[in-house]
Length: 86
Image (cartoon, rainbow, N blue to C red; front, side, top):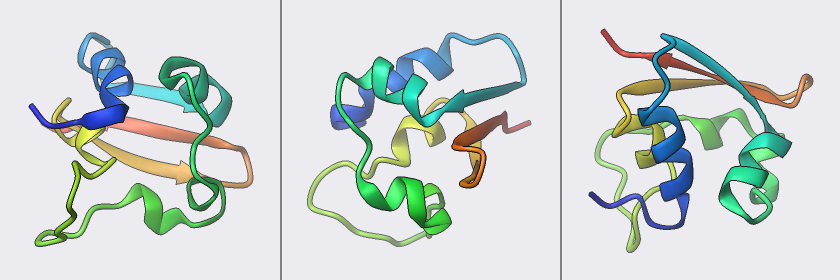
């Protein structure tokens, strides 16, 4: 499973029983042990995944996609809603 440095976020989401999980940017940074990149706080597109998007390393969105969740950011509130995919 290729989630790279975002593995702790994957683990957290994978082991939550709730269908929806809301995490603040700060909570995610605590889980990860590093600061989210600036676009995560300013660009809602950072929280989306486009099919066919190719990168040299694992894409950060794999953390929630492999945990069977979607991500919907609320940038003004500084949080992200992760919803289980049925």
